[in-house]
Length: 262
Image 1 (tube, rainbow, N blue to C red):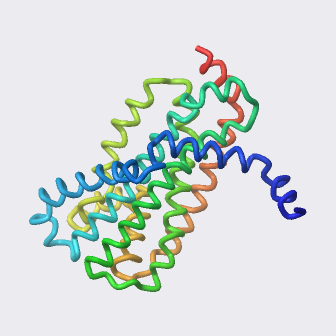
Image 2: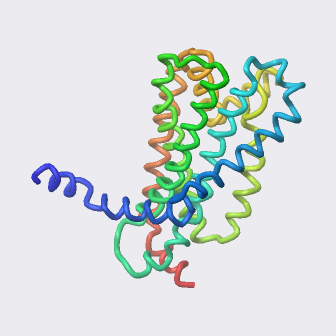
């Protein structure tokens, strides 16, 4: 009982976070097997289209292109869905926010938790597919949860800013949809960096998603360790950005409430 009391004192909104996350999962139809199958439909269709179009051209530059493409799509979908869902989180919870007093970041974190749950199931399917494709589990697979946590940190840091701006500017959803469409092609999801010129290759390496996806592929397919310096920079940058997003959300709490009243 003392340990439970201590945990509640350290983070008194744990139960609220859990219940809101659970509610988000149910709203996204993740509470049933059919709902989960629907989440798989999008990456499967994307895989079929991209593999059909680019396997003969790009596949000759990439060993095990099927696994390469699957990893890129699953990790990309995780980031895209997490940020989109975080963007509209405050507006979706409008009634709760207007009627109850609690830290507003709980709303954003619950939306990220719901997406993380469905994405975790997709990752399990991905790992099963890699084994089916002949990939032998390596010790570097132990690093994959850490890379997924790093991507979640990146999505959370971006999502906090998007949630604040999304509550204030309704057009942001369409703008973000356009930006993520462009970002998809600026991330090596279905193509390798090696086919690009050195200057374009260096530019795309500035994309944090590029670093995370490449590191995941190295660990899952090649058994190579990711660059520790790059991972450390991403981690520290994600922490700083998340802290800034949290500060912005708390600072603009009352302005957000006024916007939600309209």
